[in-house]
Length: 367
Image 1 (cartoon, rainbow, N blue to C red):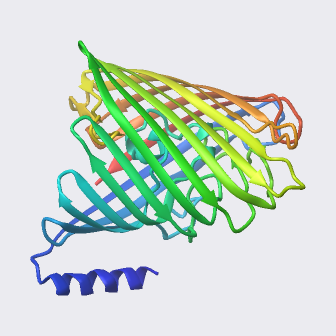
Image 2 (image 1 turned 90 degrees about the vertical axis):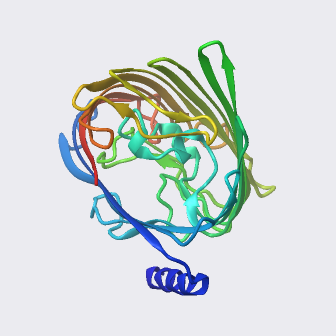
C-alpha cells in the first residue's frame, strides 16, 4: 500500500512537471497512568508511547498537494507502522478543497480536530459512536463564517477508532459562526449513513489509552442493514474561557426478525487558559495551534462525558466520566498534560457497577 502511494506521488510529480517542496514533521507522546479500580482486576500503572508519528507534506504547485503519515510507536494499542493518513488534495481556490485517499471523516468536532490541540489526553467516551478515518473522497467548502464537508467512503482497510464500522458511508458536516458583542459561538451538525457489509461492534476504554479492558462493549452485532448517525456540536469562546459540547446518536437498523438498536453519548468541556490564547478556526470549524508565552502558559479544564449503550433489546452498559485536566505549555508545540478521571459504570457490559479512578500524565513533543 505504502509503496503504491509513493510511486503514485512520484508519477504525479513528473506529470505536473512542477517545482516540488517538502515539509517533514514528527510528534511523540509518552504517557504514564495509575489506576485505582474497585474491582481490583486491572494493573496499577502503565507506561506507553501513545504516538510516534512521522508525516511528509508535499506541495506540487498552488493547487495540488499531498500528505502521508505513519505511526511507529509500537504501542500496546496501535499497530506498528500503521498508516494514519494518505491523501492527495486539489484546491482550485481558497474556498474549496477536494481530498482523495485516507482522511478524517467529516463527523464530530472532537474527531476532525487534531488530538494535539485537545484539552484532554484522550477523546471522550462518546467518540466511540463516531469514526476517525475513512478511505474515499471528501469535499470541503469554506464560506466567510461557515463551512461544509461532504464525503463518500468505502471499506476502511484499517480503522483507528474504538469502533469498527465497515461498508460504504456518506458523511457530512456543516458549521456556522455567530458573534454577539465579544462572545463567539460556533454551531454545527453532522450526519452519516452507512451500509455495512460485516459485523458491527461498539466498545470503549474509560478515556485512558493504556487501560487493558473496555468497560462498555456491545460485542459483535449481526444482521445490521444500515447505520444512521447524528451529531450536534457547539463551541463558545470569550477571552480565555472556552465551552465545548457535543451530542451523538446512532441508530442501527437490523433485519425484520431483530429489533433496531439506538445508542447515544455526549460531553461538556469548560476550560480557561492563562498567559496564552487558544485559537479556533471558526471558518474551518476545527482547533488550531495555541498562542503561548514560552514556559509561562498553562490551562485548566473540566469535562463531563457519558456513553449510553443500553437498549431494550441489548444492554451493553452505561458509563459516566468526570475529568479534570491541567496543561502546561513549554512552547506552542510542546506541553505536559495531567489528567484525573473518575469513570463510573451503572452497570458495565457484564452487569456490574464499577468505579475507576485514573491519574495520568503525558509528555507531548512535536518536531
